[in-house]
Image (tube, rainbow, N blue to C red; front, side, top):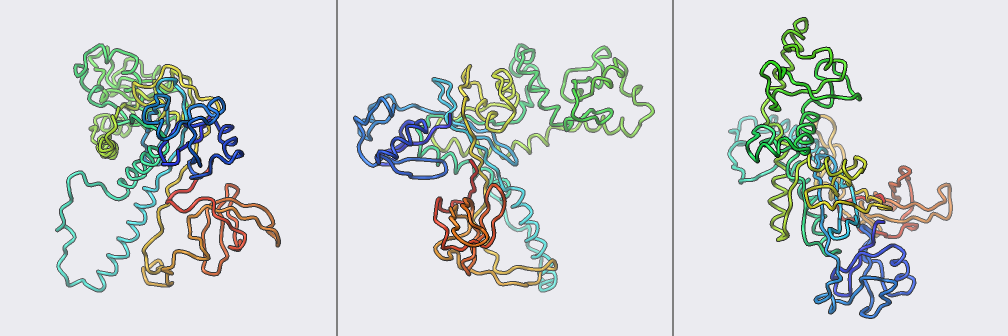
Length: 446
């Protein structure tokens, strides 16, 4: 069951509580809603003797310093290019307290930067073509990441900070690299025993699935059972290195048998050339994918909490052994060797979080040639609301009678648009709207 976060009067985190206990506190007037997303309550009074039988784990701020009953949680992170999984896990009991999927806007940032660059270059080619080029005279600091990548790191760090303020987090686990490439290439790095174990197989399989795009190398078949295939057969001195492995469907694998690939594809020279070149492709691409994760790792260490790291192969192994479905948040719960043998996941519902940014500083809108066509208002607030607020609109008259909850887009006229899970509702007057959650750069769906 997804728990409700609880903080005391001094905004210090207490044990997350069951939703039924949260409702009881609200009915009794002993707590108030502090934050809607993630749902957090704040106590109104000292609660050293507050019906511990019904609200287990709640202690006052003064007791918290010496009370060992405050559960210590581990935040677990599965970083991704588009979506990152987040999970809070109690290592002692194996209970998954809270999970979420964080959707990044890195590709939107990339497209926005591309558009801005195109407009700027077009304008400066027209206006300043006689000036000396100076776009390569700026040095970048060590560890620099482009905005499209650094935004992903910033999103994750933001949520680590927020969760740390509402729960007692003592450790962090993150998936540092998608694949342990060195251990796949050099069997002696950690001993032959590691390479011959179960986890090594998961590491190699995950790498091959990513490298060959989950398709058969010989016929291009997708959505079918794929097997690990030796390009140079083992019977003909082929090795187990990742550069000698590919994926093949069952018919192609059986058809090839122990033939040399040059004999098997002698009638398809183009396919042979493509497979051989792709197989020998260095692991630099994987290292580039992992660059963001290394930057995240360095920033997580700055929090002062111990940081455990794992690989994608270990994550998949943990998830498969525990019988969990493939989702970003269950992947996060299974990151690292610290994952409890049994995870208690019943009733857990993920919070869907999407990064939305904080608007734009562009002073005008342009046509496709880059010429100004419309002025942009510099006023952020209209009728007490700003774009990005989450509101509840109770419409009592007109053609749109009903209750709408969602992210609002404001206009100076006071006629707002509300994005709900069922679609976009346009033309809702500000008079019907009340705040639920102030803009914080994200949108939420429970």
